Length: 99
Image (cartoon, rainbow, N blue to C red; front, side, top):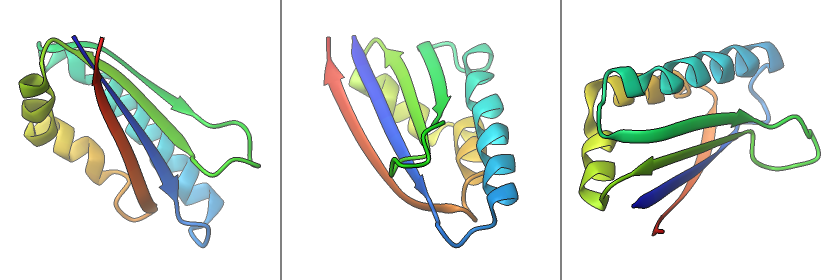
């Protein structure tokens, strides 16, 4: 089993309302993916409630294999969900590890 964890930092200069709208749309889109991508074993999106922290969004997901993670990364529904953050995203950090 592989855990796929991604953190997103949003642009400081992006309007707060636009960031919140993008964050909620992203959460809804990602959490709907298991119904469309059967090899997602688990997915959860957390929106940071602590403004003193750097990262705004945490994505936690589980897959059977790294190949499944790679297929998920290029799946059109996943790509469309990621595009919801395009205007407000500054950076992304990711780790994939076996459990």
